Length: 327
Image 1 (cartoon, rainbow, N blue to C red):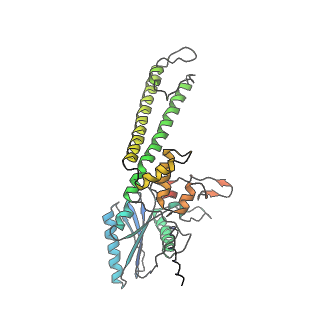
Image 2 (tube, rainbow, N blue to C red):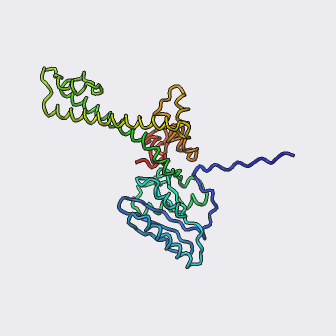
């Protein structure tokens, strides 16, 4: 007798909820986060009004508000067994979602680019209207309907921290390039084009440079260039520190999960340690929880900013699309 085949567990692509939704026992809340205040909107079972409360950025205040709304539902004869809260990706990252989940609240982070917006006419933009849009999208997602919004995979504290070195290095490389371009532009104004700021002896050579007229670099410009070269040297040292720390970590624990994947990828011809580190930390660590974001990151699918033949995208590595809380 053949054994029955095991049914595969459906893969949650975060485009819809797979948990059964009972509107009579579920308290729904959405939060519009900003630096100075949090605007919280709710849907309370048994209560006709849909409350809207402005809070100071305080997680304890948010928790007290949700408990107060739970008590209101209980007075109306509805026992709340599920509290679902959602907010958009942004500067606050994922810490609030982790904090709420640790206290028994079902928290979700919505891809800001996945919330559909009407383009028929110019839409007013206020926090109150934004919370109404979030409520409609979140409610549709809880019902299990597709195309209302898309949730970001919430990384652990350790997963977020593991992404910091290569992201910091990427930022520093950009700063280094900016400094080098600024030095070259400053010298180009004087007619000097043969100077290479990346050489070790660049600071010593700077004082001996001459313009096509045979004039030395003016004192104020020379001081400016010297400071730029000092900044470039500092940035280069910081990049070296990040790379050195990463190599030491690989040597200490070469068989650890992420490190092992990184070393395997480095064996592939054409993939260096920087690309391998980015792939492991940004894509492979997702475990395909967010398949569309992974596909956008690799350029396999269009981004929400693509329309017909026009491609105006912010790029597949936009933080809102990746859901990584990138600052």
